[in-house]
Length: 201
Image (cartoon, rainbow, N blue to C red; front, side, top):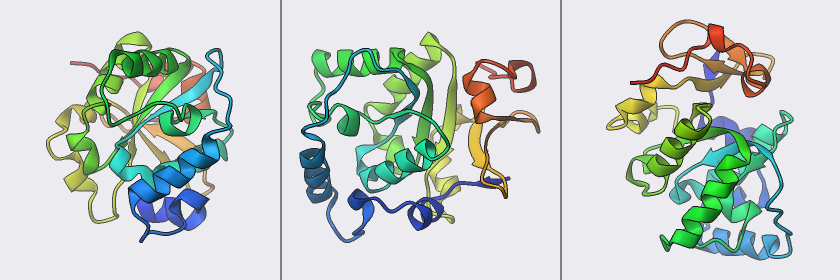
């Protein structure tokens, strides 16, 4: 098993949003939003994964979405799938839209990064999904040398399994409490819980 890192994501998946690491996040986001403006958002669409992330990590998020979708998963990212949302303003309407998307998602993957520790939205999204369906896992998103720093101050993440892959590229949910793992498709289908306990509190 091997943790998925920023380098791995950007090496294998390089969508337009992430093509220039020197382009500012705001400029890249504006371009991505413009491309998404004609996308029709369906309030009835179901997703396998709600990707919980810090917008400061936006340069990686589209690549992560593409990475997960290459494994056959339907992935929701708010500013891609619902470009009318304004993440810079915390409003009841924004929260209601996100809550609806989480309710239509089988799971939540929490993109753990240094930026995640200062996100206002991420703890709420994680808590809501945990209470609603309990299928929450950590997707480490850090420099190869920064994984420990990404977890500092967020010790609660230790109760959730994390996503990793094997040499064949298959995705697994790996327990942080015990040395067991379950293929992500099995986890999403609600099977394998006896071999991958999500220990809480």
